Structure formats: C-alpha cells, structure tokens
Length: 349
Image 1 (cartoon, one colour):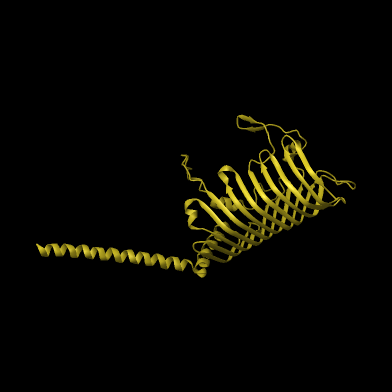
Image 2 (cartoon, helix red, strand yellow):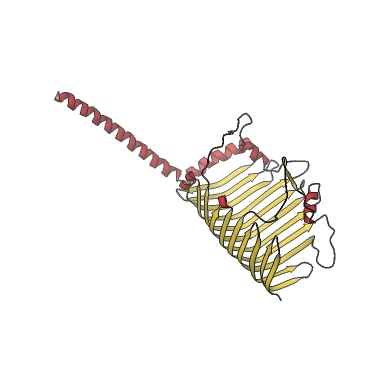
C-alpha cells in the first residue's frame, strides 16, 4: 500500500517537474525572442522582408534604411522611400522618432510622449485623364478581396484614447496637385513645435498648450473646372441645399464641428499665397483673387474654434502683401461667429 502511494507521488512529482521545465523553457524562449527582436539588425532584416514583399506586390520602388524598435516605448525609422507607379516620389522620410507606449496600443490607447519628424517629402498627384490619385495602388493593395463578404453585424468597439505630448516637425515639403479638381497646393514647412494637452476624438475636442510655426510657406492655386461651379456659388453667397439620399440638408454653419482651444500660437517668418486662376490679375490695389503675404509674424493667444465661431487675441502681428500693403504691430481681440464679426482693442501701425 505504501509502495503504491509512493509510486503515485513519484508520478505526480515527475509531471510537476516536466511542467516546470516546459514553463521555464517557454519563458526563456520568450525572453530570448524579445531580446532578439530588440536587436536593430534583426528588426531591419524583418522589415526588409516586408519591404521586399510590398515592392513585388505593388510594382513600385520601396526602400528602408533602418528600423529600430526599443520595447516598450521607442520607434525609429530612417530613410524610408516609396515611389508611385510612374516612378515619381510619393513619400520620402529621412527620420521619424516616436516615443510611444507600444503595449497600450493593444488596449486601444495611443500614448505618445514625443514625436519627431524631419526631412520629409510627400507628393500626391492626379493628372488627366486619370480618375484616381497616385496612391490608389496602395489602397487597392491593402483592400480586402472582392469575394470576402463584409461583416454587416455591428459589433461594439472600445473607443480609441489618444494622448500626445510633444510634436516636432522640421523641413516638411508636401504637394497636392489635382489637375482634375483644379487644385495645386504646396507646403514648405520649416519648423513646427506643438505641446498638446488633450485629444478626445469622441467629443471632437483638441486642447493645445503652445504651437510654434516658423520659416514656412503655403501656396494654393485654383484653376477653373466643372467642379468649381458649386464652390463659386458658395463663395458668392448662393449656397444651395445639399442632397443626401432622399433627404435635403441645408448648410446652417460654415464653422468646424471640432472644438479646438490653444493657449498660444507663435508664427515667425511665414508666407501664404493664394491664386484663383479663374480671375485675371489686376495691377493696382489689392487683388483678392491673387494674394501673396510674406514676413508674417504674430503672437496669438486664447484661441478658441468651435461650431459657433472663431475667437483669438492677436499681439504684435505684422505682414507684408505684394500690392505694397504692410501691417506692423497689430494687436486686437477678434471674434467671428455666424451672428457677428467683432474686433476690439485694435492697435495698428
């Protein structure tokens, strides 16, 4: 009897030892896997396999200099290049560094402590007779197959929580050229720094502490086309109702549905150009269809943007316009709503 009991104890002890050995081996394997995946060369190798597969499937040129992920917080990408189907640059990214909690992404949380993006060039184009933009091949590549039926059953989803502290952008060049729509937008961003306080997409709320924008230029050129008719009618005040299926909706407000607040926005050495090529240029006075602002400098505080209007305090604002108009040391409290436009405490040189 005692021998039988001892034999059973021995069997359970061996089973326990085997389970302990297997658990230890799995933990050790997991630790080794994490350590290996933390090696930049291994990460770059895995990313290279993905890049090669993407290049073969898309038929576009794709390359990556290096990828470094330091679990659990840091992601660094160097020299990412992506061309479109015509071998023109769609995206070039020299440096991206993100301090983000990767594990919190599994719980629908985006917690970014800092984001730094430098030396980036992006180009979106649509030329005639094409009806799609030059990035459409990526949309088609990652779209589900046509034979896969979408899930029509609505499933409850946990909302994404987003928190971003510091954003730093430097030397960002972007173009949006739509020949079919008649829009040519070019942005050359020198430097952009932002410290954010809160982002709540479910409430459409963005709260910002400070923003610095410097050495930046933005130009927009609009050319006439069939789609511009509605835009021109809206600009002239003849806003027509918008049809939505069997319902008719009337535009009641031209303001954003977002709620954006910012304590301070500082603008240094920035320019903005607008050209409406449907109107001829005039040689005298202010040409409202062809405006070119340069040397824009301003300190703007207490900014509030919502669906009721725009409000801000301007301090020491200055700007030059190509017609010869020059504003210096402008200070004012401005408010523009759907009911009134008001400027108080105006000071101007």
